[in-house]
Length: 341
Image (cartoon, rainbow, N blue to C red; front, side):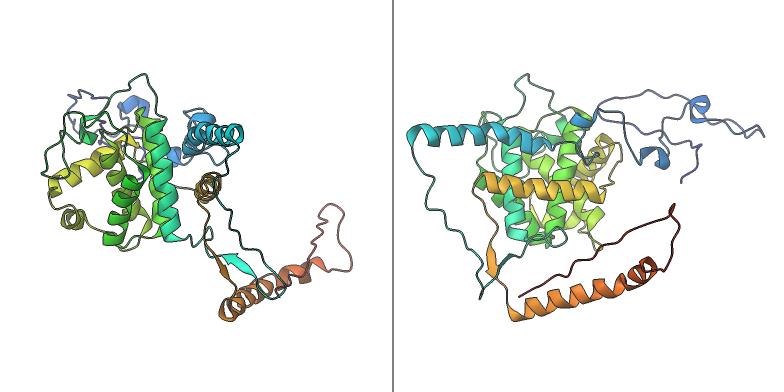
């Protein structure tokens, strides 16, 4: 693994290749490139930064590219605000908690430890906008994600199963059930959304009423294995979804990976971008994260973290306070005290 020459050839469900090459006896020759050997398996070092697609169409790889779900939600948000302005209606009493001298209200959701419940709600809302504002040109529907060909339950699939868009609550209940039963974390929900948008970009497909459940299931399955140290096995999902088989789960995971071109890397910058875009989505749709008063225990923990960081950079401050430094290597470090009352 990691060798530039390999006899493995990756196949994709979208592009089938007919390879009839046979292995020949070993001959001591100079090392051949991948083009000479005809091997299409990409080296892992070549997949660190994928630049094949334009930045604006590849948000799951580039931290500066706009997320797809946020751009698709802008139309509905503008229409809601325009309707409220024309009809002079208010969306309801705005209840906000403001900090005072005696009480400080903090959001318990951070980029390193997001709030599980509200993160799942935001991810479900993002998937809802993906389905609602999908392309109308009718992109192809892959068989592996078609719920009629691969049903998740034994109940009869209605004839118009691909006509009615699911409600946000229905998407939330489906995602929440999987996360609750598998005991997944909020970070896994964000990675799930990254894989979902990466799949839509790489495979050039749309998420629609006919395939959204299996696409979300495949993204959760892959995200849980990549993110969590103790991943949920495929057979465990069969205990959650009683009517699905292990073979179906294995095939779903295999084809999902192939459509992602085995690119499961999520840089920290991309993860942070999706987290803050989800917060922006929540704010635009009046889905605010809960504010809790700062307790004495939490204040002591914050103070301990601040003290730990101060000790960490103590050596850096000492190095900056030299009597004389070279003008070429002059570095000015400014420090401002943080006050938590």
